[in-house]
Image (tube, rainbow, N blue to C red; front, side, top):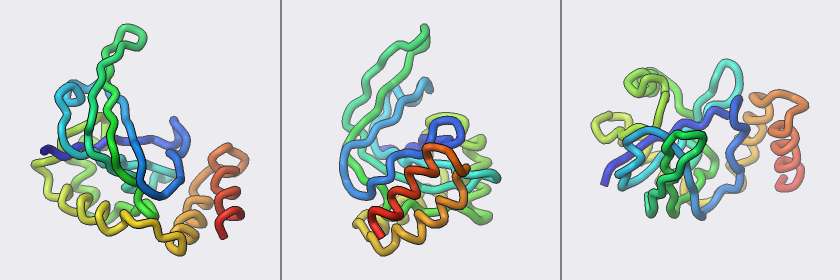
Length: 164
């Protein structure tokens, strides 16, 4: 089974769901590696300016379904997994080397050959169980990264007031 990353740019696509726990997760890619993907996907999200990177969620690939959009072939990849609780900030020289080796996350990519994949697996497993007490500091950090007045800012504010 292989390991893959999928990048989620929150500035362009908004925040991913903030519902720590297990469920079904999905990504879509036009990259050819999506066609025969089999294994585990790690979703890395960037938030704020300058960008802060987080390991947001992970899932086991259960299905890959091709679809066409505006003449481009895409692959819808989905399966069971979990959102990290809380999502884990990725930084430091080892992460920067990983990001550079992935061409700054330009596409869905197999990462079996990269040493940082061990770190992603470890973080995903360590932060699988829902830890509500750990979510508050994360949400407070996130609130400082998202632009005020946006839907993302309002969503994070709402989560902070509902849960804590």
